[in-house]
Image (cartoon, rainbow, N blue to C red; front, top):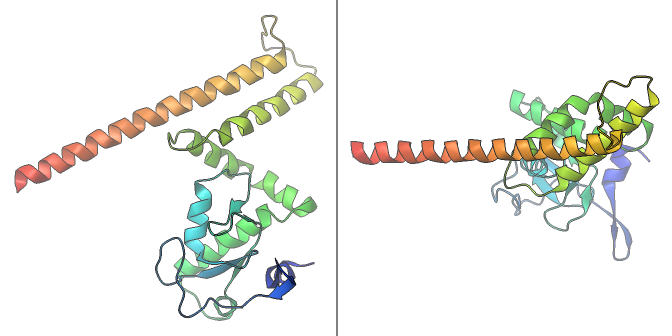
Length: 212
């Protein structure tokens, strides 16, 4: 089943039901509560601004699909409004549509989805590091970093190289401890940056009060 076909039907209480090709006229984006800009429909049938739902995904795990804010269903496909594909769009709209297409390819599944994940690996690692530096994020990224460290340890054992001192811990334990240490360092850096930012905001607020 193709992307368009997957986007046109959703499981309802009584089976498959047809989904609309455009958002309701009297509705608004559930994230920004404003009129839809670059409307995109999730595979569960809810409509969002394209930029809003992608920004919402930025606060979740980079390697996992975004969960629908309305029903908590995993969003594996975002279908832009049909009219957007036919009209001459602005540069901003074009960029959002490209980001939506990129998101869809990441969670397409199968061989093509795996190849896309490998291709986007630098982007996923960057997102993961940014998430680890955010003090408000949960511990989802810790599990992903430890899993990545385990894969690296397996690759290391499969090679003829033996240049990492283990000190009797074993290479798997060394990679795991290194991953945990990296997470702690990044979280401390994120807390320090947050503190510096808050201090800067307070100084700017104090300067504005003095000028008044």
